[in-house]
Image (tube, rainbow, N blue to C red):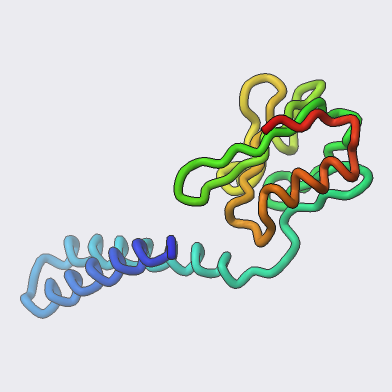
Length: 154
């Protein structure tokens, strides 16, 4: 569903570029509109491609957790103090991990932070989970299983 907007904008700009060509408008302006159309369509394809990606993004196991969307670095359970499931509006959900120290640099400086782990403050890491095929409660239960020392806040 998020890809619909860029596809619509790309179609509108593409239609505008075709109208400009048909009416004999300035080639420079038509080129800019066509490039804008191509950019919107490319963004739509990029977003839609994620809907068909079935690869593993987040792993929680006995060693710790890792998020392939942001750094793909293992954060051991020994460095996790607490976890909290934060549910926003419209199905948005995040797991907030409070770490005992600052997150690894691979997480802090990852270019994919908008879609995976996001450092917040000094030792808090937010993991976006609304785009995953697992419910937040199931992930919290997995944390309880693999790391019983981690405090679960609701």
